[in-house]
Length: 302
Ligand code: SF4
Ligand code: SF4
Image 1 (tube, rainbow, N blue to C red):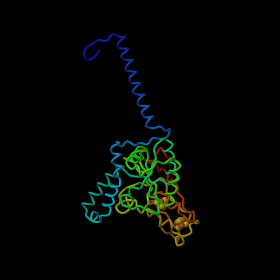
Image 2 (cartoon, protein in one colour):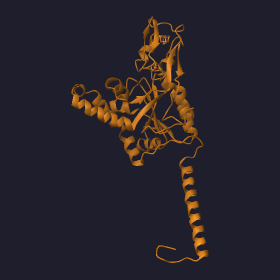
Image 3 (tube, helix red, strand yellow):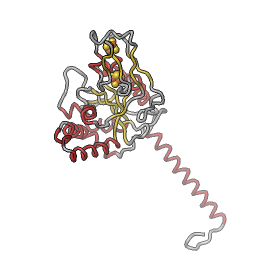
């Protein structure tokens, strides 16, 4: 019986039940086909749940956000004044609880972009927002190090058609190798600590990266450590006096001299691998930390 008090005969009720079942099946089929259209590949899924209008705004004005962080990080008076420091730290904590990065080594970065491309998502690259924020475009090192994925990449291609270009898997992996040779740090930025929520792989020039400078100078937790730690075969190290490249290049100040050779402070090391590619004596390698796991790159990297 309906709420209105109309009594249905048995055949009418069963026809209605059948119609209801059919409607549910249609709704389920629509959902499944919709998700298949949105994700045409067969691999892992990028968890990019940010509303499209926020993606448009974020990608359009990211360099201005970077400029603001740079401005705040460089204002000494803020950090000398306890109240201003507390307010700035509070805002930084809030922002970093929404978005931050995780460091990948070259092999992980390459595996990730191959997997993303294999899953049918867009990959594009364009000029690093930190460079744009600082008006620091280089003649010597690559500028187009901002590697964006999925819907986030599509919004960049819409917003900056002249600045961003689409990449296939081979182009993306080759570019990563080139960035690595230049001593750039691969790090994936995501949102809200959600697994697989990867939006961008920054390939940071340590002398330009604003979040890195804010992290080192002001303790901003811009990105977390990767899964690896650098280890040194002391017999192969040619010595700091003759070489010392790793100490000069380590973006996190995790290398120092010990008995003429170069040692690693495992607690400080982020596992970026910058010291591996530049090691003269091939003495440095990366070792996987026990129990370490990736969050934003999860699903795309074994
Ligand atoms: S020692 Fe420094 S350069 Fe080497 S992996 Fe660790 S953080 Fe990176
Ligand atoms: S780069 Fe390699 S060889 Fe050179 S000091 Fe560092 S560990 Fe030793």
